[in-house]
Image (cartoon, rainbow, N blue to C red; front, side):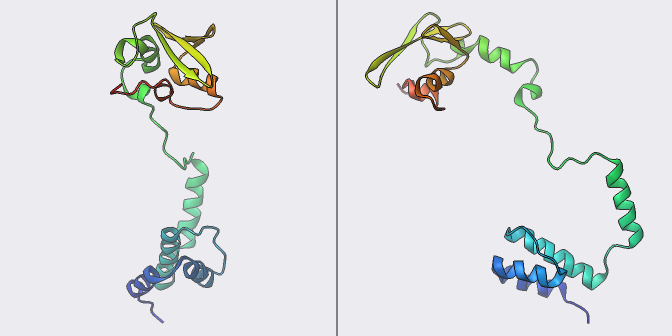
Length: 164
């Protein structure tokens, strides 16, 4: 019996995820762990095509296994960090220019203040970060985290919005 793969694909597009899950088990004889609809459709389509037109030969399977054993296979591409993509070290530029480039901050030596939970907070702007209660921090968010105990945007915490 010759399968009409295009017709079968049209039927798959109309099926629910649960139906696709069962259809894959029916065709392949094994359960699939995924319930991702597009993944199931691809798996079923590949299996239907293999049944209709023939699967890989044993020789091709052995060769694929040899190639896979001899090479390092990455499942995801490496992340290119912004610092590597640009010339120079972005991290050192960011620390050195914290206050010079951001118009929301007072000049070096100036202070930020805010009332929080009944006490007055005061943070001094340094040329390479911030100082709060004798401790130095690289970012305003780090200061806000030290104060609140949870991560939050330092500029929002100290109410330093673009229009403020």
